[in-house]
Image 1 (cartoon, helix red, strand yellow):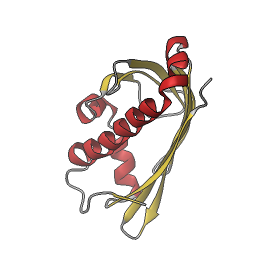
Image 2 (cartoon, one colour):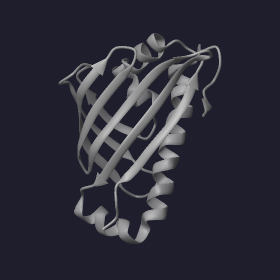
Image 3 (cartoon, helix red, strand yellow):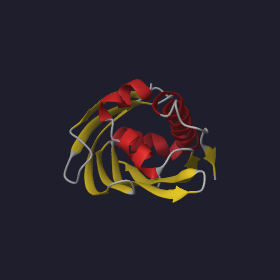
Length: 157
């Protein structure tokens, strides 16, 4: 069986933590910002809130899952639990930086869909490529759409 998909990346954005948090809180815009996000029904950014999501990967499959927000620290943290085709913890940490703010996105998600789990044993490199592609496109789309007025584009740390 394939292990979880682990992700831990950090970006610097040219906006203050409060501005980035306010932008991330504009949940009604998520499907406009991210072309791979086919569905995202969110009931706010607060502890106990949830979302139902469908992601269309660059490979021929879609992932369906629910996200529950476990903890929120305004302008600093959103910690979640993911359940569905994917399962595990995910979090966004935001901290101040001389350039604006640092955003760290982490998750450790296991495939729960039985078919995808079997396929992942043989196609893990392709699935990791698709995963990394979705994230790269997501950051670029977030910059272009959500932070269009930011002083500087994000840079990978």
